Image (cartoon, rainbow, N blue to C red; front, side, top):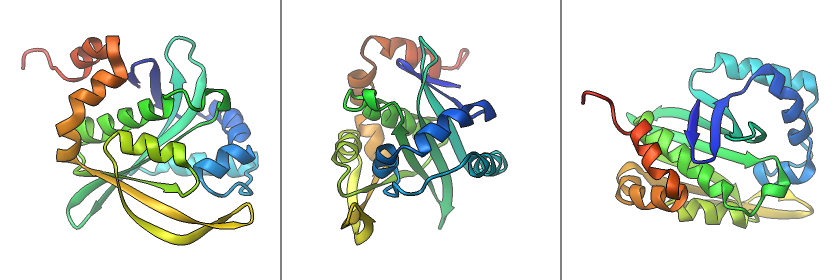
Length: 204
């Protein structure tokens, strides 16, 4: 498990599928996270998806939960890619508890994914994707140093309208240049404990 401030990332377990079934069939949650709000999933489909996750070594799937209460609030993933000898981590997340939207947790989770990608998995770059109307996600990504790299014009059809899909990325050096500022802003009083736990190895 990976703790970052007041959130914890743990593996998805089979008993989590009931909660995922609720989130994956919430029109609004999936509209913003996947841009396919009509992509409903039954329990059998989720179970098959879970079995695929277990077998796939390139992808890490997490339940994001609050440290104190252990309440599951969303999911996150890191897909490890190695194309043309450049190690890329494709990251994504959504908060399933809609009452927690707009409270800064998306940004906190994104910084945690960057920490895992660059500081633990040694990625050269990170990338993320978002639909044009998901302004909250764009702000969270850009506040963490992601840059908008391009657009797939009118690639998504949602609620009777065609929307662009945006690609964001950040390079390792770009992240490292702002890392400590991001950690201070995000973790505040928890910074010292995080650095002691994740950034030092006794005897080195």
